[in-house]
Structure formats: structure tokens, C-alpha cells
Image (cartoon, rainbow, N blue to C red; front, side):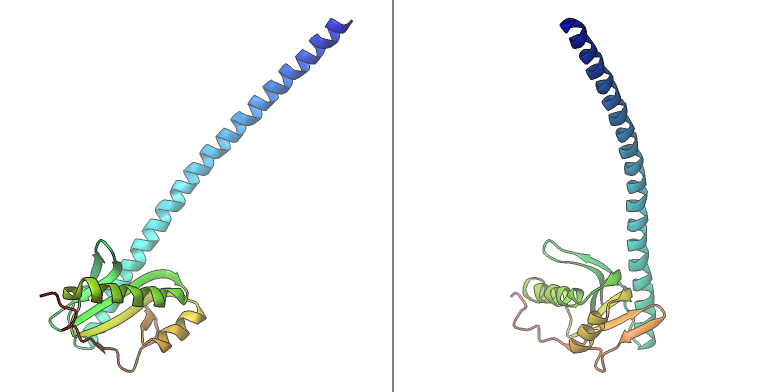
Length: 178
């Protein structure tokens, strides 16, 4: 009688083990589907990011050309600083960031990157500077920060803030390495 009860219990455990394995295999299948979808989301996000950067470069290049400034705009990648908007000509430098959505923190990050350039790479700057943030969706706090910090804030169809003095003067002499 006792052996029969143990065998019956063993059969139940075996069936439970089979059920757990089936559930586990179903979960693995779901994880694989999620991985496929996540890969698509990552590719879409990367494309959006590249699209907004390309759009920003094109729009800003056009807008500064209307102001009489000819400048190619690309990105700048150095060991200690990365900008997705960067351009120079003889006496003017443009540095900025492009993103789909931006909060006030981005203005501070941009100013920190400017400081790194001043200290570590002054040859990348010019006597006149334009700071710019290009974003499709600026948070209200960013608009306030852009006004307070004289940062040009825009998207293709709207300028959220254009400083009265778009150009900042930089005194680079004491930063230049001899």
C-alpha cells in the first residue's frame, strides 16, 4: 500500500515536471519573440536618432546661411567630449545637441561640454560661438534654461528661443596651448 502511494506520488511529480518544462519552453519562446521586437525597436530608435541629427544639421545650416554664415555642420567626437552638432569657419564655431525630446538638464550638459572644449581642446573653438539645442519636443524647463543661458533652441518649424545676441565672444588666448 505504501509503495503504491509512493509510486502514485512519483507519477504526480513526473507529470508536474513535464508541465513545468512545457511552461518553461513557452516562456523561452516568448522571450525570443520579445528579443526580436526589442531588436526592431532598437533599430527604429537608432534611425530616429540619426534622422533628428541629420535634420538638425540641415535646418541649422540653412538658418545660419540666411544670417550670412557659411558652415558645414557635423558631429565632433573626442576622447572626453562628444557633440552631435559641431561646425566651424574662420571666426565662428557652432556647438550643440540634437535630440527628439529634451529637458533642462541638456542645457547644463551642453555648457559642460563647452567648458571641456575650452580647457582641453581650445583649437576646436573660435572667437565667436553659437550654442544650439535642436529638439522636436522641448520641456518647458528647457525653454526657460535656454532663455536664461542664451542658448538657441529650435526645431525645423519653430524657434523656441533665439538669443538677442546669438554669438558669444570667447577669449581663447589664455586657453591656447603654446
